[in-house]
Image (cartoon, rainbow, N blue to C red; front, side, top):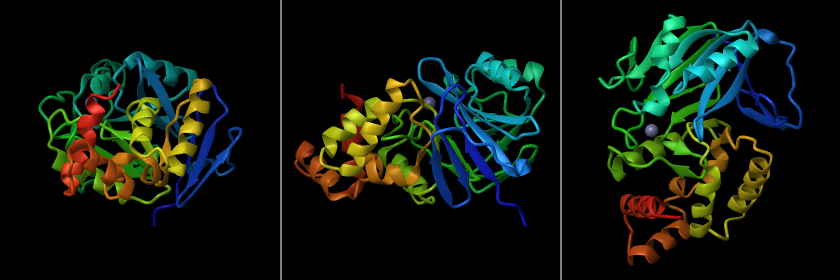
Length: 294
Ligand SMILES: [Zn+2]
């Protein structure tokens, strides 16, 4: 039987941290150190470019994995700063800001690169598909692979240890643009993610939460959960802190793209086009409106 891992969400130079043990989430004002070091994973969003996050997971033995390393220098700095050894790279989709640092990292760290089946990701060493599992021993993590087309056709998510690493498909208070997929595909992907446990930590690829929140507020101005989340987000960004990871429960309560069936969201969609009773049409209406929202 696999042990219950714990994940500690830490933010390099800040005081906001969340600690997860399977099935529970609690936030703390200051980072905590658990005594049972072997069961601890540290989760760190590494800011890259203007608004990307490269997600790093490491144990207390100094073994790390990174997800979507668009910038090798950011990862190298974090490895050096924390005295970590890179053990694996996971990729969600082919966009350059998510894979651009892989070749350089492989030059110094000969590690496996897990990636979806897509010829545009040439650095992949292990291709993953929907329903497969990835099991690593150092750090000790296990992820299920979910195919979530929409932003791109080969986009995947990695789900495990209370985490959802979802690239550019689900953002806090928003979702990714449809560069390759259809609204029906993206909605089906978001539906899959939305069914994960509420305490799942959403580790998205970009810090888009404030802008997403402005759009969400135009759709559901009277949603008290959204109002509370917007206040939280404003406070975090004022202090230049990440708004991620968020919890899936919060996203279900606040994110209009996960609330296609909620009355206020359906009403808003109907007002846009004079009728969008079909949920795919409502999703398409919402996504199109967000595309041009300023
Ligand atoms: Zn992308």
